[in-house]
Length: 237
Ligand code: NDP
Image (cartoon, rainbow, N blue to C red; front, top):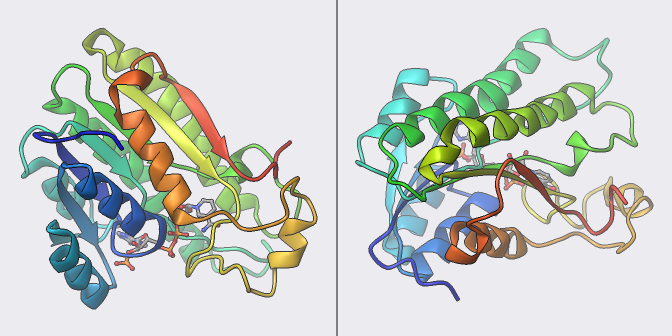
């Protein structure tokens, strides 16, 4: 376990799934954690109570709300952008407004919040985005737009790593493969199709992704920056 006593962490999109596991992990390792929620008030309030963290309502499609949630906590040592939605299906049939909403959450909000977090971040801070293994590999139909949003994060972290490197701030993206959450249940209808292209034919767990965040946020990861950290059971092998 890492020791983040005295460190301040912000997790954008922390009410459920991978985000909630990250909130729990960082709080259990001593960080003071603020997280945002958009639709899941009850889950956010329960998590805040149980983990001793602060829950703030901010929809990632509302730029001023999300920037205020990032800014108003003061200098942040560890910033995690986890919020994301997956709109998948026939590109000829999908609603363009849904695609734009996904781009707003998965790309625009990630970029603006990461920059805002860096503004007052102390030297040696950590910026971690949650991407997807689909940035590397798209073996199924229907995932073009979602995968595009996640591959945008790759060049984002490469560039921001250069921008903030003199302050020893590291910027990385963690790219999970199929992970058992509401978005992608291990017993869902697509699970066996996903497993068919994986070396280890099972869903990963949100706690494993949270452990990766903890490692990247810790002192021994000081030299890892501008990098893609894939944890996908061999989905992209
Ligand atoms: P879930 O659907 O279980 O949770 C999504 C989280 O994002 C929730 O906390 C939700 O908050 C938040 N969120 C969604 N929309 C918004 C919004 N408009 N504004 C703010 N927050 C929002 O998904 P996962 O935990 O599975 O996914 C987390 C991240 O991991 C996403 O970026 C996803 O793309 C990525 N990922 C997931 C994989 C998987 O297999 N599960 C695989 C690869 C990547 P609320 O409910 O309060 O709205």
